[in-house]
Amino acid sequence: MTLWKNDGNAAVNGDNWIFNLPTTATETDEYAPLSPEDEQLVTRVHQRLIQEVDLKAVEKLGAQRGREAVEAATRSLVVESAPALYGERKELIIKRVVDDAVGLGPLEPLVHDPSISEVMVNSPDEVYFERDGIIYLSALRFRDKDHILLVVDRIIAPLGRRVDEASPYVDARLQDGSRVNIIIPPLVPRSPVVTIRKFRPDKYNMQDLVANNTFSQQLADFLRACVQLRLNIVVSGGAGTGKTTVLNALSQYIPERERIITIEDPIELKLQQRHVISAEARPANIEGRNEVTQRDLLRNALRMRPDRIIVGEVRGPEAFDMMQAMNTGHEGSLTTVHANSPRDAIARIENMVLMSGFDLPSRAIREQMASAFHVIIQLSRFADGSRRIVAVNEVVGMEELTVTMQELFKFHTTSIEADGRITGSLEPTGIMPTFAERFSQAGIALETIIPTMGRWS
Image (tube, rainbow, N blue to C red; front, side, top):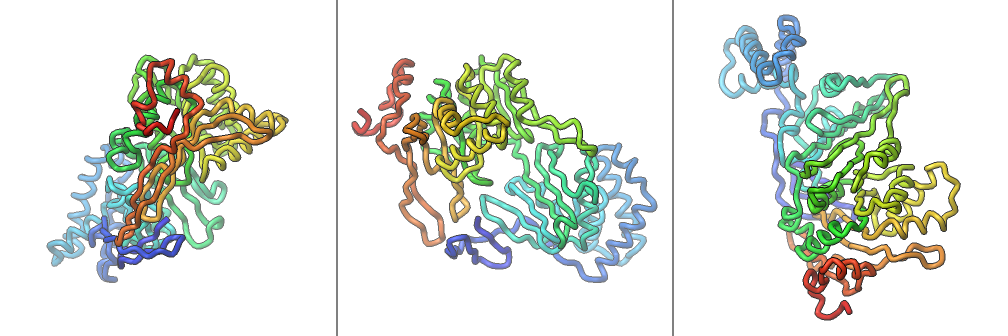
């Protein structure tokens, strides 16, 4: 992960490389620190607004009309409190008060910027955001910890959730599909911490991923054939590498006539087919009851006559049931796993199966994996913030106690530009996949998809 500060062009990543990529601030000066005089004015106007306007009634007007009503009331209060105030300074004061009253306070410009993928609040004076894989330290500030908690309450209250000493953290999906995680003291002693992973309504399709060099056209054509020929595919990668984006893009190749059931926690996929049933896991309530896990949903999905099952991310004992489904007639299923290499993905899934409660020997688990999985796509985030596919492996079978794989595609770095940009390409290795016969039976010649200059024979 590369960490950038808005007040400079230097960045240091885990390898201690220093890049001089230009930084661009999303927020304007509207949330730069105010003068003490203006901060006091904002506080006074906000307190009067709470006393004189029924904000609960305003909420019933809807987001747009409610904001307009609060803005009109705030404007009148500012005129009364500071009649000499005018121009940009006046509008800035009004916006601050309105955002605190009916919005998300200092987070407003970040949550509404479509180029930003994540927002992270570490403390009142540490607000970060991620754009294009790079983390920036924002100029935005909260007044204090209570100000953060005010915004937290506004985020989770409509969800029927709470965060307090009895329930000091919460993970939830917002109404727009974004994911939010909140954790408060004493679990994090310094300050409440808020992490928002924003939902993108315009999910990338395969053509977009080819255009931004995540995929090569060769690989896109190859994976299209894999999906249509009902190979089971695992998308592997670290946090924030784009696993869900790739999974969503792969799903576009599933034929329209098939019945698809997706299982997620929380829902993120945005499939384009009509015959899609989306199921979402449910956390336990405050009393610790009524939890519905991904495993529960997966078991139920098998009774719903699915043609394909897509598990957004396999994290626990549902891995066993997913493999059973792949091995018992539900070929063409897709999932993702948090892992740093194809070999790591196999090891992690084995550990998850061991969590399922079945006392299975390692050999039996690995044999199940070797027959269930056909292709593992590995993603990585590079030091310049770009996300790319770095390998495509075929799961071949078993050799003694080891699941064997062979690399079909591999990323080769060609150069690191002066500005830190990494260039390279994903190339076929020339190894013939063992499932090539399935391509031939479907009338697809691999050489027409991936010219290999005779390397596949």
